[in-house]
Image (cartoon, rainbow, N blue to C red):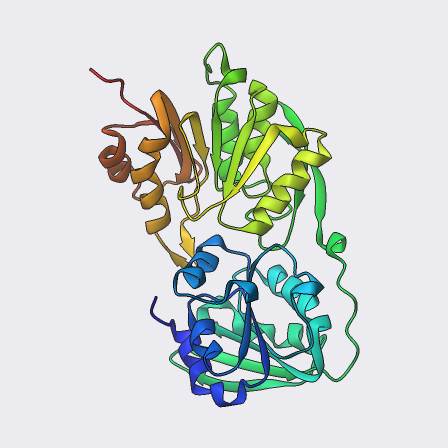
Length: 353
């Protein structure tokens, strides 16, 4: 994996990155490069980047995939490097998480592409750090740094859980979310349209014994709605462990914890077996950029995980060029709906002739 521009900016300043270093949500394999020179830990909330670091040989005893950092993983860091996330509330969450882990006098570095919103993050850094300022900038990227000069508040995970009641497609659900999870704290328009369309669908007569997959589960709204509608056990998959934790909390809040299986996976890599129904509101961003590769990879591999005559339901912004990809993957597709800037596509695993 080539280093992205933000990591290249870190490389320009790595002579200062000495001692015990923690990377929070690294976006490439730079932690491995730096680990050859100093003591480096990496905390990932994305299965994709966790797998990438594993593949290149990053020390697994210093590599962690979790929604929150456990103190036994390590503390007393000299420097903590955060890559600017797309969601500002996730940056707040990360800062609150890592400040207690930083030595007195230690530094937090925040690096990001200008398009990521990093320019507006100074005030967030100043809430817990002193001497905050621009450290470097190049190739449309910025690096900010600040020092820990005052005690940090203890991190309390439960304070970051958002819970609310949501009426959608004939059901009233209790939903839970965490910073950085898609649709955080509100109903996404595409999900609303998808569930109302599914509410009109005629599922197989023995659907309670069927296998259903929610790809890109977010806060678990689709998975929970499907369980309530069909009585089936749901497999919920996401690249984000924050999303998986939110889905776990959502099912627990509705007293149906046993009705869901959670899978952290980059695409369908970790999925076994075939499903009668696959439902998805798939991600189409990589950072701030439109990225077809996630959905394209999913569409091209989902055929291997559909039963004969198994059904795929997809909701997407209607400007996304999904139809030819669906046709290439499944042979054909049907557009069930198009309005309000969204489209719903349906495909089947063709029966053998």
